[in-house]
Each structure stands twice: as structure tokens, then as C-alpha cells.
Amino acid sequence: QVQLVESGGGLVQRGGSLRLSCAASESIFSINVMAWYRQAPGKQRELVAAITSGGATNYAESMKGRFTISRDSAKNTMYLQMSSLEPEDTAVYYCNAFLRSWLATSLVDYWGQGTQVTVSS
Image (tube, rainbow, N blue to C red; front, top):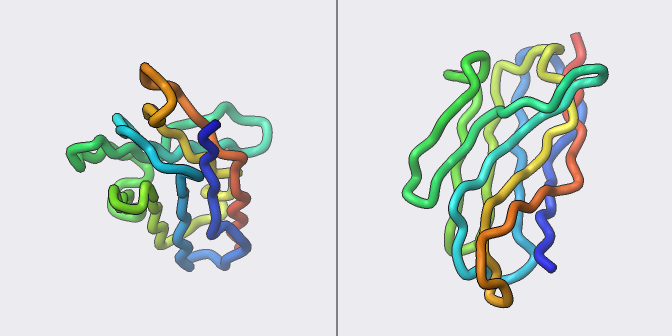
């Protein structure tokens, strides 16, 4: 069973930066799309950014210019560099990947456990 393990969350002041990481727990046959989502208290989960196997990226409008998504295919790891953080960015950030493990015959949607990001004012 593939697991996505997030790290890098924490407490940061307004205007600060954080880098989140998401690593797959085992060797992967192929990854189609990886993405970061976030969910603030009392709000629905929303897409932050996504990156395809070819490196194409997509960002939510409010994250453009402040967040950068990237991936290291050799390490099956995805990153989210966040800068100019605001209190409104406070949320649990989730890693998502649509991938196929070596034991599977099709792509499966996986989620990480989430990592808390808190931005103080």
C-alpha cells in the first residue's frame, strides 16, 4: 500500500516562507498528477497547485506568484515552496497523487495525512 508522507509544516509569521515535501513510501511505476490541497477550519478542501508528469503546473489564483510546486521524479517526491504567507493561508495541507504502484494494474488516487501550516499575524 503506497503512503504519501508530508513534512515541512509549522508555525510561521506573516510574510514568512515554508517548504512542504511529500514523498511516496515505495517505488512507483508511474505518477500521473501530483497536487497539493488545503483545508482551513470550517471550509471545504481546495486545490492549491498541481503538477503533471510532464512538469506542467497549475495554481489556484490566490497562490500564483507566491507558491511554487515542483517534483523530483527520481525520488517520487513533490514540494511546495510557499512565500509571502498570510494568516489566510493557515490550513492543513494535503498531498495528493494519482499514481500506479508496481503491484497495481491501474492508477489509484492517494492522499497524505496532512500537515498543519499556521501563519500568525
